[in-house]
Structures are given as C-alpha cells and as structure tokens.
Image: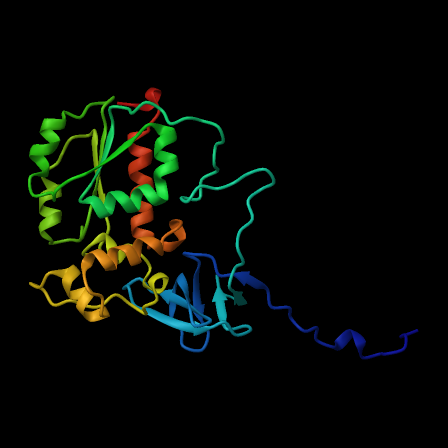
Length: 271
C-alpha cells in the first residue's frame, strides 16, 4: 500500500543550484559579503565586480557563492563564443558581412580627440564604419570645439558625433561640451583621463592603471609608474593587447555605439 519506503514522500529534495556564465555587465551579489556589482572581468581565476560607485573587488568562483535576482547561483567564466554556423563576427561583435566593399564616405563624421583614440576606434569598429561609409577624424583637443562644429555646419544629412575623454561633471571638458547645442551633433564621452585608460588593465598585465597626481603629464606618469621607457613604447603595448570590444571598458563601448547609431540614422528618421 505504501511501497518500499513510507518516508520517501517526506524527504526534502536537494535544490539544484543553477550555473550561470559570468557575462560582462551581469549584476550579481556576493553572498558572504553582500557586495553587489556588475561583472567587468576576471583576474587570477576570480571574477571582478564593480559596484555603482566604481569600486571593484575580486571574488573566487566558488559554488553557490552569488545571488542573481535574489536566487543563489554558481558563476563560471564563459568560454569563447562560437558564432552561428557560417557567420563570423567583427571586432565590435557585429555580424561580419562578406564581400561588401567599403562605401564612399558620407558627409557625416565622428570626431575623436587624438590619433590614439582614432587608432583604437579603427581597431575595434573599423569594419562597421567602412560598411556604413563613416570616417573617423582625430582632433587636436577640444578647446575650440564649438568653433570647429560651426565650421563643420552640421545638418540632418551631415551629422556629427564627438567622442570626448574625461567627460565627467564639473570638468573642463563638460563645460566645453555644454556650448554645443546643435540637434545634429551628439557628444558622448568616457570618464577616463585618456583613452589608454579605457583599455582593461588586465589585458596589458597590470592590476589597475596607476593614479597620477593632478598637474603631472598623465602618460609620462603612467610610463614611469610601470617602468616603461616612453609613451610610444607604452602605446604599442596597449594597442597590441586590443583585438575586440571585450578588451575595452564598458563606458567607451557604449559611447561609440551611440555615436555610430547617431551618424548612421536612416534617412526616413532624420529630422
């Protein structure tokens, strides 16, 4: 009547803890400490989380060590992504389009602050920009950004996107950007002093970018702190460490994607 084990129905089944890939920007909470943050990378076998204040901490990938939407999970480092059959991806993560020549350059442009910025953008988004026919041009700083914009004469068919370094509230850069009010210009930026800093430090073999005192040339200070002879040597080391968007910090990625969307808006949506 009761079967072989009358207590079987009362036994508690062991709960299965789901295993989740620690993808970039996944927000989780460390169970033991309560630290909550987004996944920004991996270091020495641990996941690196960054909270909303920009603080980072490393946590071992132990079983049932994290909460995701209030549920206990085990995080694991994701393996290399395989594109769908017959598809390859560009360095920006877009689906590559085969046998399509670069378009004739459009009137719209994207401006960046210097040659290093332009080179880094080309390395990651170059394939996408060539397909869209968008040229990236380096500026020699943004001190006269409003004058340069006026000379460019932006319009619905001649849009302008501008990527600015160190675009944070209260900075000189934020005051300069505030003077640009054309609806056909979009200025985005990242919080880093220089575009070098937008490359994830672990990609070049360091735990974090050195903190350089205000008033001191930043690139030279970084080179001295890291024991690198010249900024040229450091730049070569940085550039060779970047092969895709996964090597860059999220603020730069988001800013560039917004600029590309803005300057490539379909004609029927232009205003």
